[in-house]
Length: 633
Image (cartoon, rainbow, N blue to C red):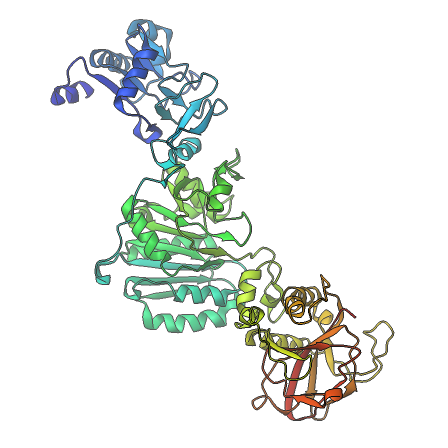
């Protein structure tokens, strides 16, 4: 066949032919440099062959061969006479073939470098222009043809991210530009948006909000939703009721379904195929997409670069954990690649061929057809690893894109959704960024940076602190716990068993919220205290008395005048006057100054045990809740 093709092309005998397996090879130089390296390495021999990298008992699958046309034809005639298979090069590695054909091997890596057989001898370097090249530091050579031993060579794929002017230290990613979806939205590719909640995940409400903000024509989106968690059903039902009005088709497998995760992901691929969609975007519930244009950008990039499987980079806030692996160990698990940190930190940006992606994956229709069984390919590992293993084995490249900031991952490790009424309230340590979005008052930072904080009474400062979500959930968590104190002086919760000025309350410690609340005080109250009471510092803050008080007629409607056992106190109204209760407020006796203390989530911060004798005014109807903290007693 080769002889026939050469005849058709009318290639002269003086032409040099380079024979490579294009799937397992990368050419990094121009033809003049390749010819020079060939002549240098070949010497008096007729053709140049890559060194043997596998035992004689196994078929050689990755070979590069270079020589003049007559010599190459002799090689292929010899291969055919030995085994009749021109795709097998094994027979070339016998002494007889070497002597007969005049072959020599590029043992110094002058032109050819098999990276899998010599990974300890090579490194990636950058020249003065910023372009990457492979250096064999043992032989001090710079080969132009880089080879992998097998389909899906991890190292070859990794090097392919850089060599051949794919990436430059000066200019970054150089391989492709986007097409820009500027045509009519009616012509945009259709997409299955497949959403998965396969384990307990915090902040699903916020996840669904980011999904709703995806900037892509809803007329071009079909929804597939899989959820196996009872905890999320109410919020998901609200989302789906609205989704059914917007999207083309909505299919939902809820927590009652018998589908497991593997089957659900396969069902999503089948759904996309049946909907005749151009892409499927598989999105897990712990991915929060901050950039609404994420789907547009990914589709645009996939079309321009012909990327069949591509993921946007998302990471845990402030951590290196992400949705891709740059390398694998011998067991197929995570191994940190030399460029992993720089990719995660955004110091190197581009589109990277990697061996593992998860959480958010865009797949083209061509790949949808061949990946339906990927999640069940290896049931001995998790579904995501089975998918990636299948893609690697089949030679389907997977890419991660960090050219834009797309969003972040929520830390769902060890999240338990069924032990508390509002478990997200306890996530301040593990998921502070999204916790803050839900629970800190939206005007808090504006107040912190403001020169003027309202002072309704001398040294009584009023500022926004807790969001209404926080106040509502804290009340509900307390009522769910339900063990309110009696409001009497005897109190076995205290070290001495006696409370001078008792209230009907529940301590933060009783609902296992003590360390979270103390951290909240240190991170959000202390900075405001340092701003307003200049010259006083204590970090971290200390507090023993941290509790929610309940005022109502027939139980305890008011509180006698008293000093707090604190350096300073923070009182925070948790519900609304006129809606939830009537009456209430605080009177500072020394100043004869009364404040309504009825702005939900607004802290009243004032000095404690010496100057600010105060009393709680009667609640005349309904129930009033306040959160109280005695700081630095």
